[in-house]
Length: 106
Image 1: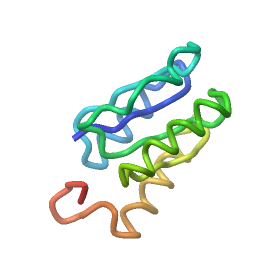
Image 2: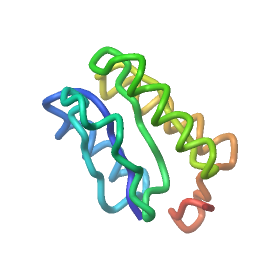
Image 3: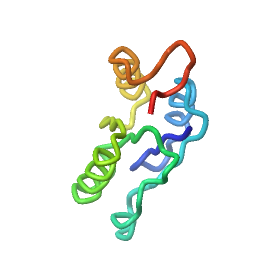
């Protein structure tokens, strides 16, 4: 199962944090190229993390729209491990993440 991080340049610490919450692979789109607005979220993606400080509104809106239409959870945060950790813990508490098996429900 895969998570998609959109925005930011140096996201290795964020990838490690997301992996520690049960997602094996983490893909990253820098969000700086104009053509990224036309990209589609990969089919195997189960979580979208948008780093608000590092992408434009058009890309954010397009990705959010695509993720919501597919029923994917979207996390908006700053490029901070603590912020990502807090948002992922909220997802676990809300039941989006099944803690017992470490697997995402969708």
